[in-house]
Length: 74
Image (cartoon, rainbow, N blue to C red; front, side, top):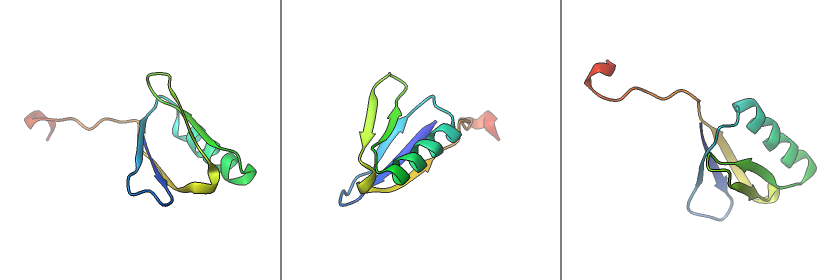
């Protein structure tokens, strides 16, 4: 699943590919915003991404489904 993180005062978004469930990500965002702690997520390679809650602009949580590609996908 792909997560797009908008950070205040940055022109670029952070895009993280993760195996975590959308509900886990949403809960982690809520906890970070309510507690003032960093938003934490692990990517598919095991790396940990930390973003301070104070600079979170938005977090877009993608779906876990992959769209088919090619002529047979119609």
